[in-house]
Length: 379
Length: 227
Image 1: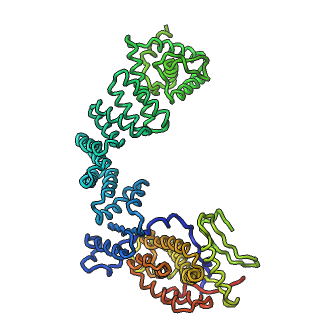
Image 2 (image 1 turned 90 degrees about the vertical axis):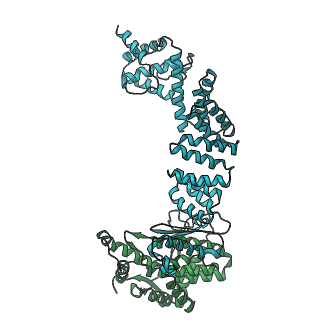
Image 3 (image 1 turned 135 degrees about the horizontal axis):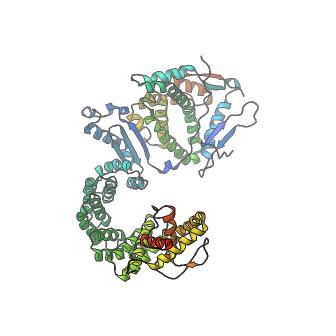
């Protein structure tokens, strides 16, 4: 006998895990499957008859255990999931989808669909999964079958619309999205999607109507509020612009880190800029010229470091929004004494940015005002 | 003793070198530990039921890695990469197979004892078996390049699956091993388990018979247990 390589310890048990609540599942490489278990005509690996026979084998083996067995076979591996009586394979699959395992969930869902092809929730989830993976034709086939079986399935109708939209066939998206709202007028998501779609076709009034309904149903949905604000801004009456600005502010305040908040900030800046220019019939805001002139004088006197400190403080303050159309001096700075209006602060920041790096985006175009201020200072 | 850093649920360290106690370490868990403690204690009890001169340590030999290596490469054309990986992989396979050989047959004796004498632990036992079986499924797909676990060494796992099915009164865990063509090996090992007397004096014989049936007779040796 040779040298001792190691002592083999007594058995060690790995931790119990949530596996006990999961189905019993396993995978088997195709080449490991015992072909003698299959009928002779199905022993050619990789063929459809082989795959069908493998599925039938496992389904047959687990058939008398109660519950459900889901088998998928691809070119390399057989995957088997067994669910005890009372547990739901679909719930498990939806869990996979929610966890982002969309590619892995599809063969699983397809396998279930083979034996339960009229299951609407199954078809819906399968359709959405295909849509998420960019396989829109497959998505539409599954979702259309779902609404054929259950015409009141609003989300399946919406899914069809979204698939068409993603295919670049937006005109074809409107009909299913309208049907979604007809199927369930109280469903906020259907309203939101239809509203957004109509807005894209400049059917603003209709869009606003649906988005208002969506907001009623989904008062805590940032996308809905942002969508309604966008529609109101597009419509463009004074009252609607005020409401849009209020809604953008709501999004920024309630979901400050969200994409919708970032888009709302940009929208508010654009909106403020538009109002700012409308209030300057000559094309030049003389108050901004004055603010920039003063700022340039301060920077010349107090130096670059001070300039940067002031610009940084204003930029940070601006993240939560500066109202440049309210002349009231309601803002203060730690780096400068006094009270400032929103336009005053933005003008100071703009002047600083132009001196530090002209390519920096101050979120507003005051280049004409800056030019005028610079010329007057030189004179 | 509770061991927060333990990666496994429990381990048993037999007292040696004058230590007064065996040490069972367990990981904090929201599950009752009763089954695991009984299971680990079973190994100690069976060992010390034997007189001192009949207590042995289970030690691998060089033939284990050589034998594993032969089984892994049998009938395969390996790439240079696979050939380079083979020694380490063979060492892993040998260790894995010996661990199963050492633990599973005697573990089944202990499981049978728990199932018969402590029915109040049945639920925990079944739950634990489920986890173990789910983990064992990884062996079917485990691979490194073209290197896989040889099917001839999976008989022990197939036997354990048949055994846990028997304890649970079902036929669920053995099906994957049937599909992989190794269930007959598992049945042979289970027949050996059933044919050998259950008392601990036959534990060595049980392991040796399983080793014979699995082609692993010269993969290990018994050395006298030194307390």
